[in-house]
Image (cartoon, rainbow, N blue to C red; front, side, top):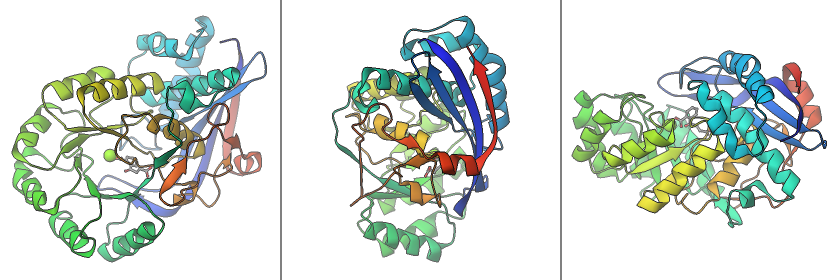
Length: 368
Ligand code: OSB
Ligand code: MG
């Protein structure tokens, strides 16, 4: 793709309010911004979405940086690609490290779309003008959660996701359902349960949740299939799906009725789109997950989520959900519950260089 250089910038910002799951509370977010510059001067951006510690997946900001610097960038230098869709195959020689891989791959999709003068959404084959927005409540306190949900409903958000874990589930959901009888609610357990909890999970059936996300172990698809046969609430897989093959097998054995697609978790847009295409063909709804990300990753999510199989609102909120000021301009905005799909070339957002400078921790340039 005629690359001139790749720049990695580590950035860090506090969240407006801490985001809690049963595994970790995130109050500050480090990420890696990838800037790929072509010999023609065109630039594409990607964002490494691993967290500072390995609570969600095994990757961290430091391991991603190591993979990018010591393996992925050198590999790309040695073996130039002509098309971003070739990256997935090239990177197969390096095991896993999906978020590090996706950070480069997404930057190359942006670069490619910009060179063609089309938006990333169009480049991926979408025609949608806007996508519905969903939001995640990362606050375990019931009263705080209710007041946040009330605010989001007023802003037009289409559905709400809450985090659950044992003893913070049945009564919590009962109260939310009492307060919001018709709201689309989904619950994400981030692997807080085992099959021994099947009665607790069955007890959630009466609340009409849209789905329960990743109730069981992050590396399991077998027990999820057993669970899905015993509960009415659709099971959605998040952590368990890190490749196209994972998605194919999970569907085949009935582990889930819905899949949350995260570009970073599956190693890039090529695989994300492939999973989408398969699910669409099989009639399995998908939605786009979030990683408490900055505007660059969010912009990639918007393009992906504009594909027709994304029939459920994703965890895609505006820049102001987590940040005082984002690193992109214009900021990503939710209006009447929808986000407009940009029509400008590539991801359709520019970097806010002043803000980027304020939040930069370190940067390194790799010449090709
Ligand atoms: O499990 O979907 C998840 C955030 C960080 C890591 C994992 C998850 C989440 C979220 C929040 O649920 C999504 C967001 O608003 O970005
Ligand atoms: Mg999840």
